[in-house]
Image (cartoon, rainbow, N blue to C red):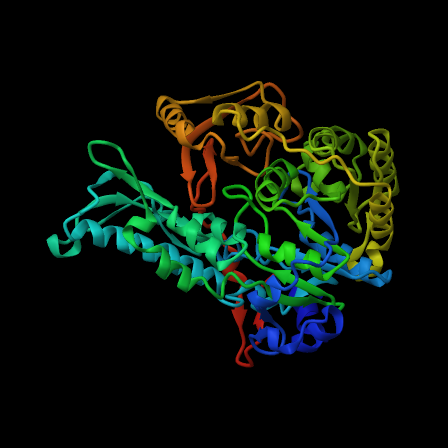
Amino acid sequence: MSDIEIAQRAQMKPIIELARDRLGIPAGELDPYGHYKAKLSLDYIERLADRPSGKLILVTAISPTPAGEGKTTTTVGLGDALNRLGNKAMICLREPALGPCFGVKGGAAGGGYAQVVPMEDINLHFTGDFHAVGAAHNLLSAMIDNHIHHENGLNLDLRQIHWNRVMDMNDRALRDIVVGLGGTANGFPRQDGFDIVAASEVMAILCLSNSLKELKERLGNILVGYARGNNRPIFACEINAHGAMAALLKDALRPNLVQTLENNPVFVHGGPFANIAHGCNSVIATKTALKLADYVVTEAGFGADLGAEKFIDIKCRKAGIQPDAVVLVATVRALKFHGGVPIKDLQTENVAALESGFVNLARHLHNMQEHFGLPCIVGINHFTSDTEAEVDLLTRKVEHLGSKAIVCQHWAEGGKGAEELAREVLATLRAGKPNCRFLYDEHEPLWEKIKTVATKLYGAANIEADIKARQQLQQLSEEYSHFPVCIAKTQYSFSNDPNVKGAPNGHVLSIREVRPSHGAEFVVAICGSMMTMPGLPKTPAAENIDIGEDGRITGLF
């Protein structure tokens, strides 16, 4: 059966009952959205503060390929397996964006028998959090143009407005637009553009805020542009937009509780992309889960060079948390792809290509162990085409690097297929607390922070930027040098070029643009040809999605 067919046959428990029996959450602390999803009260979350925190397990992966790695599937399988072994475990995931769902990626709720349900709801609208983020973001956009139209008392420079509009769809035609056409009644014409909601600073702020108070303060600190003449920075609080934006987001800040196919509790909350944002679920969901469970399994988007780096250097730095262990997901198929095998031939045994592509896994493993000081287990997400010779080679090469590789079959078997991985994770946690460290010091200049990430994690020889980007970095370094950096680059390679596989060395990371996220408190460096508004492929996934007369959705995966 397809993923959606498996999900549609799930025997779900009413979410109020699940929360009471598994987590001890009273019914009055939840607002159900139907029978199988609910939002948790912020007041209840505050009352958990004095409880001890559980152990945090981060699931990351090798550089993604069209063959698929199954990071979310492994996260769900591991969480189910920990519960099967008698532990109290929770899972924390990001919310899927509609754009990729209808574009290339499809859904993002796991796969096979390691899924989060209700799958269709999670992938399509869910509890409306993405819509709330988009509405809050675009409210500020509208109020900026309204302020300019009505005499522009803040003297905003129309050439230096740093606040695009957003929508939760892949639409390349909206990347660069002109607004205000049609005469004076429509405002002043100026260049504008759209980003996807997952790239919005409002999404980042939502996912880094611990309370409504902090959320409102961060929204007020959004840099919207500069004044004419003196280049004075102008913030959202001066437009008087932050109060209304926070009002739109009051429910979106509350974590969403759902369940796996095996009826284990999951928070699915927040959804910043990892290739153009910081790629982690919300701080409030993760910290709440740590108070409710002994073990929390969470993921960071795309490969470890993006998601895991930002999880540690941005999320953990801001939230005061750290992972106790890391699972690095890999597949034989993906490593053969990194070794030069085309997609159509990945099911054929090719030990030589696997050995060649192993360098990608080796670099990610080295980065986790040496640069971040974290114990790392390799989870081999098993496919039926994997041969004994390939699995044996991969296992031996991982062990040679001082780690363990565990073959996992959670896609086919659910939690049962990840029990060996769960036992290895538990053994690692019992071995002692890791010496987790950040990649760079927060007081280093922005240029040096970007260079450190590029040279240490990506294998680059250096970084480069044109005059405009250098000037942006120099200007921002005067006020924001203590901010972490969020590097927006292709997820498919350690380099700027998505076609360069394996583990390239000696390349130069090219910085095209720098954007300050003053409210989220990090600086975004956009590299190479990375776009903050993706486009649809020639044959988008939306062409295969349909709904029957009985209301049953098909084609969603």
